[in-house]
Length: 632
Image (cartoon, rainbow, N blue to C red; front, side, top):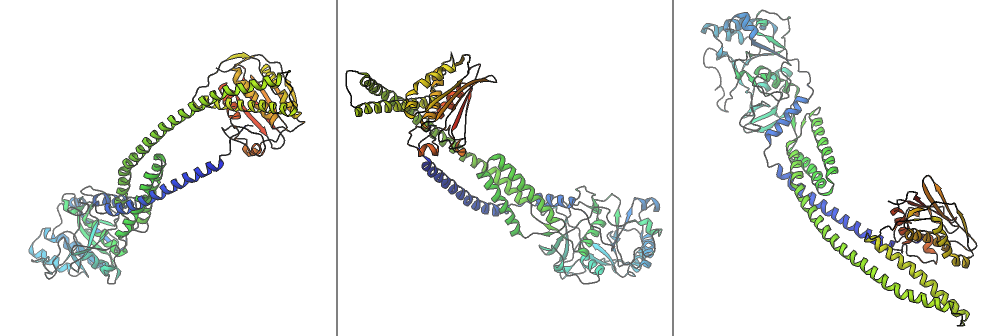
């Protein structure tokens, strides 16, 4: 039960210092991360990422469950069916008949998306068309142009169509600004404080004045007030062919108090179509459906609301903070896992805020912060890691040199100590055996003390030498065939005098065994250590039991004592080098703490095992198991 010197206080101080340094480095990393995150979160927002953000916006629109459209809107199209039945595009005469079929229905408003100037007919038919149109409560032509403030009426018709009310309501597209991809996402509410058509129509539908400022998500854009369209997919609104209305193939009161948009869907003119967040096809949605979506957005006041920029910067800051800390402080695999979770949570949050709450969170800039944080700080991390690796390499190189010097010093000192020690032992032996010299009792005790101390010192030097050989990987097996029982008898004979002094009895249970291939010198040291410990730590008038047997292809040797035992919590540590149990330290018995460490090492060199059982204060049992086929 040899164990190490008490260095627990030193270890605790070292652990405290290491923990203090580690915590200091963590705090430093947090400060750096915080500063860089603030800097990065503001810096990325100087980049215009409209194209990427618009694409991510379109993705959210596409994945968002669509709500039911309002019941105020109907759409009428001059389509291929109309051409087939009428054999031509509808003329003013046929448009007049269409309006006459709708007039009794008392629609709330009729909006011609089709420009009446493009309708064929005589001047008389034009006048009749106008006279029919003005009979409706509200009849509009939605113009692609807008009049400047002070030049109201500049977009009105100048011929027979002049009585028709023309109101601006152009379809926007991100062609030269923002995403620059030609997709329609926005609608204009006012131009130079003039209220445009769709806001007027929404006021009619809801029978109340709707102020532009009351529209959710509205924002200033040059001289206009705009908002984003809450799109429904194509064909979401009730759709009628011109020929169906012309032939009156609808139920009475179908269009009562409805707003009717009339336009073209022939697939021949790109101006009759727009690209939408759902599709970038040139004919993704008709202009009529686009106007219906714009009106429906205002009626339901369901425009997507852009989150304020400072909130977007905050999101970027939080994400960059997490990303930079992960890159600088965590292992690559764990870091990628955390970043994946970070990315997933932010993406899910962005979609949840968009639906059902209709809040549009900027995703492009936070994702850019992840990219920059990861790919810009990974090289920095690698530089730091390489620097640390180089420092560790240099430290390891220095420690290796120091360790080699230490081992050489220990080996040299141990060898140099053995020579004078052997002389001391020899002279003490000569004095004790010289029958001519008459020694007093005190002198005889002194000689015995010299012999015992010399033996203890020799054992300590031998342990240090063996430890030095292990540290320098210098232990090699000298395999021979040997009877384990013969080695046990040799060791027991060696400690007969010690057992006689302590009145301890050896009890042997040695089964006859075949010789096995072992290194006798190393196994002798193992047995000596176990038996000597058993004797040293056993009380007087006790018994030490040594047994050997063949069991399941192995030779098992047990050494059991009735000594002070080992606390259960220390059993896993006693084979560590320089370890001393509490019971051993509290006794007056000296030890180096290397005996059991060397015993375990020597047994494992033989492909064997050594273990211990003890319940404390009731003795200890050490068991050595060696394979019958010997060490390879």
